[in-house]
Image (cartoon, rainbow, N blue to C red; front, side, top):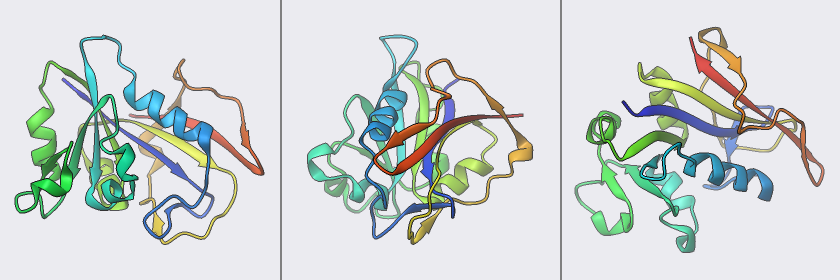
Length: 182
């Protein structure tokens, strides 16, 4: 069975995006995102990054699809405009995306990478295993927000591949947290 995880960076006001992009520039945090979403326990396996259409469109063309991962895009336009998702697989529902790949022997982890409505679906999913949360200790002006996470349904855990130290880039301090569903 493939594991379903969320990975998200969020600032103090629960913001995750602005004008179709990230409101902050954190190079080391993006490298962490790449490393975590690519890492598998077996070289024969790969991970999936599951994202909404707006998240797909927010990735610069030269970086699409995200390398080393199966890119799956959730969109109501999935059946109409396959060329728009070149290099990725389009699905029209969260259930379709999970069903198509949930029992694949080639996949290890499905990483939900945004946006807000997809995070909400993952948070409500019985299959959700972990949330990899980057907590940015600063406020940014945002127009997209992380849905409420009921932390009473999760416990804070340690993952040996995730630093517990405070991170600093320029004037921005942040920390990594990993929550596992109870």
